[in-house]
Image 1 (cartoon, rainbow, N blue to C red):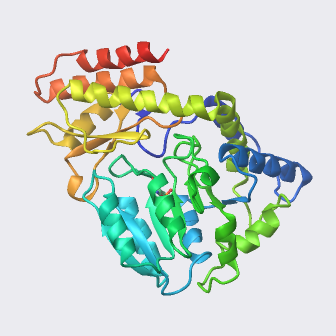
Image 2 (cartoon, rainbow, N blue to C red; image 1 turned 120 degrees about the horizontal axis):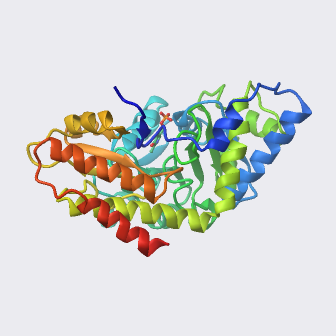
Image 3 (cartoon, helix red, strand yellow; image 1 turned 45 degrees about the horizontal axis):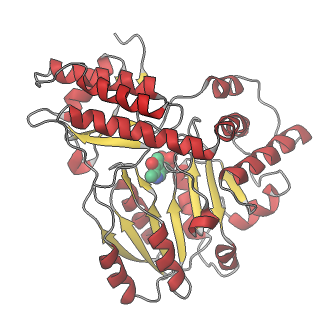
Length: 380
Ligand SMILES: *Cc1c(COP(=O)(O)O)cnc(C)c1O
């Protein structure tokens, strides 16, 4: 029997008490001045989060909905796009783009690695007509970070190219300011670093992207940026919004903005470092050569099945995620995005140590925990 389950999965993530409280209230109607006031407040806070004064839209959907919106509103059939495909979510960009008839250059990268800039430049050199570069800032399936700055430069060097970023596990983890970085379309979702249940997706688009809206000939109905933009600027939505999630988002954005983005980013960087250093101290190997601050992906030791390890951790009260596809049974992924602090990471690492011990792996109990404590000292 599991008395308490503590989520360390890269979505969904644990909810702060303020969010739970907001979710526990009676619903209000969305065609009311009261809801409009809250909606416009949340819009403003999203703009603060992304440091922009431009339109930021909310859809009632999981994150993939906003990914679909980024394709169908800003591209045309047969448009050539380059997908930075370094994992499960890179594949999602590719499959989505193909579904809508885009001409996809699928730049496949070994899982756990980030892109090679020379290779990328070579692809672009031979494809000057690329209309979009599609990437995840944080590829959650491998816990890998892709640097956006060089991609923005490449995108800008082309005649008419949009940098489209899946920021679902980076917004709320890093300081992600699209205008500073040069992102044209940025999407995120509620159940990751925004510390909410699933069901809400968010989309930012640049001035350059806006010019595409009129020209795009792909089919769209629910995910129409034009229709939503018109409504949402006035505090309404074209269809029934995720009322309670939007009310709860107001609370989670309060928490995020109160902490402040620089501090929030530093906290995530330290928790990531603590987790990475701790597992290395236990003799384990990281999957990623460019580890993200949202989650840590780590190989189980030789002869130890990662899914078995995961099950034991779960019995001990800690739920982490496993690997997908060819990494199934090989890695575990420990999240540290959103409502997490050092004490949480001490719990997770101590349970990892016990689970490894139980499986017969030679581990000096407390060795990883000590590493987290050392970085905790550094950080406070
Ligand atoms: C979770 C996630 C998504 C969205 O998945 P949904 O299940 O649609 O919410 C997309 N990209 C990344 C990188 C993610 O981590």
